[in-house]
Length: 399
Image 1 (cartoon, rainbow, N blue to C red):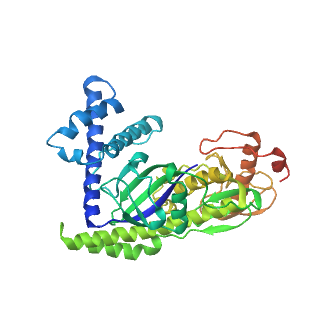
Image 2 (cartoon, one colour):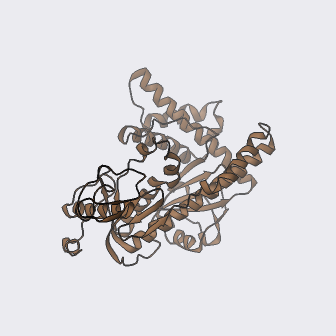
Image 3 (tube, rainbow, N blue to C red):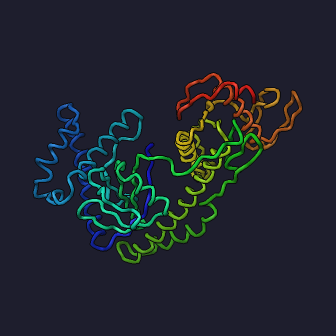
């Protein structure tokens, strides 16, 4: 099972200088490869592949006086830039992602990838130091003892490592390992549950429990505004402006880390307690077009929450059922099935005109999502996002 282990690096000044040069060279190879591929298609209609771009790198770029610095770095690492560019190109055509963009030294994060051949197999991760290539030996790093032990156990199964320099001048290494799970999975107490995602409460489940929206940015809006004003007043290009830039970047990083930690905590809790989870296949991009709600929706990280829930469900053997985005979960009465077409977004409670049941909007929606999820699960309908593996049908019929 592939999973990434992220650790923080503490390079010395010499190593920092080399990393800066390496990231710049990696970025240059990516941009040259992208430019070469685009130009070749415009001139001849041919599509440049790994072999043709690799030959261009060996025969021209690495030997030219203009790009002499490319020859100073590990060739296997430089070729990863070409592979990354081709992968971005492929995702553009297959998944409809945006067309690959030229990288800039002003991007938020600078990164490069080391293939498994460029990572020393003799690393003793328990020592708190690691070696990547010969120019980057004995780099100090910090991580939990659990991560150190895990890396030592599976160091022969390391597939790649991505080194990242953040805008806050911190260095991280994300190591992709083919290993086992790092945490034991508890036995879920609930077989099936439905989740309604919202703004007032982040999550309301079909059992009536709610998880709050921590509003991480709105609760820190004053400090963010103060730091932005401070940054705008500093002279462009000055050291003071750079200090404030790093200070602002670190504060954003702190807020983002809090949010990510909160999402991991919620997803772990949901998967520990429930075997099958039904959620709505929300159109987040479309929801962002509502300018009254866009800021709140962006702050929630709905896509990040859903992606974490899906990949962790695959790890631990849980199942995710996604209900169609057009399913009227809020408007249906969960008792008799009456559809209330007059329901508006401001209506947090409503009474069914047929059975006279009083509904809390979010709890009712979660119950409808659970019921629809059970129907889809029972019929084993393919879901667009995430894998659906049926359990024994008896366990559903007993609900």
